[in-house]
Image (cartoon, helix red, strand yellow):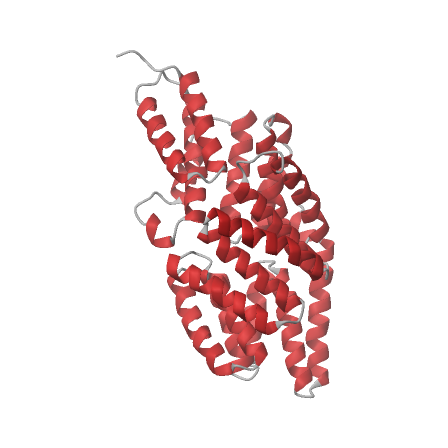
Length: 375
């Protein structure tokens, strides 16, 4: 049988990656199957085989984002795919090295290891000169912006997200990324206390997501609207949109169900609806355990400690230790304020000041950003 040229397979892998970046699952699955069939008949090419392994890695990241948790039980785990790449004896160079660093950053981000994600993204940035494809550069700027947003490095995030959006706006096929860029832009405006500027971006995103009939994006749009309305002080509107997000996430079994349940429980507690808030808390805690989501398990413990147990300081400090150790400063800042506000409402100004100082200390860590740099 005549051998298939590796260059031919390489072109097909490029097409496969194009479908991955557009979140076109059926086309990506078809091309993946075709590539796997042709690799069996391909002339020997170690670099091409590593490129294939890297794309399998990226393909799984796409599926884990789009499809519910239960769908992926029979698929190889991302960690298994990463181990296969790491076990290669070949020293990666050029685009292969870039992809390995970039995709590993995406993997760390999906595991909520945000500092590790940024470390890999920064290493990938040093290799960005080998990237000639404009959309690939947009992908890089989007993912970096997303990570810096989580770490509350607001202006750095905004710098990268606007670069990404500028590129995506030139193309009609990247609607998902345009919507996701709008989420990051709006989130950064919220963090800058300009929620009134965030709202139009989110309203446009909801419309685009609904037109695309993309439930994952619709639920995220509702969640972000809820967050924006809380920032604007409209807690009833925030609860309304958060409940809509929870309903979709629950129906579809999306992996961000613990996130939306945590936010809903927190909103209900802040409103004073402790009974429903407790019901959501109990359900959300069981879901976070089921989904093996350690961050939200800790955050549900915080809600219980603050509202149900009437300020259980030992439990609160345990949660804060987890957040500090993992450098999840955005939540540490927010929760420190919530504890201070609770003590203030009880007339314990000394304890309130203690947690306000913790909040200010966390803000200093965020501003320094020293956790993100190795040099």
